[in-house]
Each structure stands twice: as structure tokens, then as C-alpha cells.
Length: 298
Image (tube, rainbow, N blue to C red):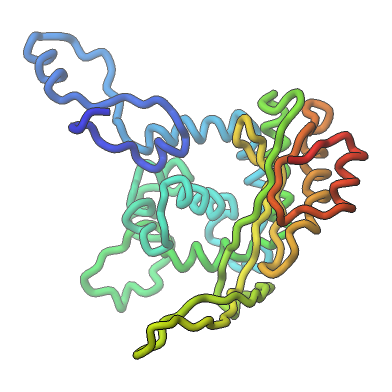
């Protein structure tokens, strides 16, 4: 990439697709020379996502998303699949917070129409709630970030794990994970507010500076939330199984269950041959179970 070319967007990087580049000078030269324009394509994220949505439909993933329901949601104005797609696009487009969504997603007419909203809903919103208090700032999209957050958080851990496993099985059915596989297992902390329902509690220590003293002191504090454990295929970087537990739980407890779930997802098309783990999973009983299953560990 030369210094004059634009940096790829988060969508381009995450989809890892080869995309066209913009060259206004060359286009101008062609038009001046009288060259005919055969086709015109918008070089936007909506164009990339059009292909992405086609993949979701063709692979069967969209059908699985349409089957999902958000427990406890009353007076449904938006189908559950649209909430799921909106949050999926939040991650795909690299939005770090919900507050960025009106600018980067909700006001993008082309993308919102792909999800299923019409032009009037995007312009005026789905309801007139709050219109009387709105003075200068216009609506940006059919819903608010808080509406998406309040509804998407109703997905339970077990429901998310089932959805995840179904998606993996779809990819396996496409032949992307055939044969012997080398996998890696690791966990990532997912902090939440202390008041989040079902969140765990983990005591940690940190070094703090005391005013007027040269030496630093050690302070104990608590982190609340969950831990996401993911088993990933080393070659393709595709996840094979996932488990979400409370943040303080011992990771090694889930080594064998995750391996078994990953193998169920692979079915007869793939076979886990080697698993790469760190010291947090070194337990003699678990390693013996891996040996009995014909799986070596590193």
C-alpha cells in the first residue's frame, strides 16, 4: 500500500477480502479519452457486506440466526435476528462502544437496509418516543444504542454456546475443517459491572504509588465478570468450541469438556490430533484423559 492509499476499514480487515482501490486520476484520464463506462460500483462497506450477507444465507447461518429468540423480550417491534445482526456488525465494523453506533452503523442507509429496515424507519425511527424532548439533534437510525444493549444482553450463556456450536457445525459441513487438526486453547477475561447478573468475582493485586514515598505498595482489588474459553484450529484460525464461565473459575476444569464439544462439532470429518495449552491447564488427570483419547498435548 502506498502512502496515498486509504487504510483498509475494520470490515475489510476482518473479512480479509481483496478489494478494489480508488484511483481518481486514472478514472479522469479514461473519461477524458472517451472510454466507455461499463459498470459502476460503490466502494463502500455496504458493498462488502452485501457479499457477506449472501454468504450467511448460502451457508445456512442466517437460517440459524432467524431461529433465535431473546428471552424475556415483550412487545417485540424488531425481530430478534435484526438485534443479532446489528451486534454482529458492531463487532465487524470495529465499533468500540455502543455510543458509536448511531454514527458508524445506524445512519448508514445501505447497511441498515441489508439488515431489513426501510428508509422511513432509518430516517424517523421505529417509534416517536422522546420526540417531544428532542430539540436540535436529529435521530440517527431506527433505534438507539441503549435499545440494542438492553435486548442483546438477554441472550443467556447456554443459548450463546448453542448458537456458537451450530455456526461451527455449518462451517464443518462446508469442508473447511476436514482431516487431522491441531488446536489451541486459551481464555480471555470479559469484565462487567459488579451488578451484572451472574458475573463472577476475582481478587487481584496491583502495584500502587503512595504519595510522598519512593517504594510502591501492593493493593488488592476485585474484577467482576466472565471468562471466555475458546478452542481454536491453529491452521485456519477458526474457533471450534467455546465456553463462558465466571471470571474466577479454574480454566483447566474445562479442558476436556471443550475438547469433547469441539470433536462433536467436527463429527466424522475432522479429528483433533494435538492440543496446545499453557500452564494453566496442566493437570495430570486431564492430560491422561487426553492421552486415552489419542490426543497429544504441547
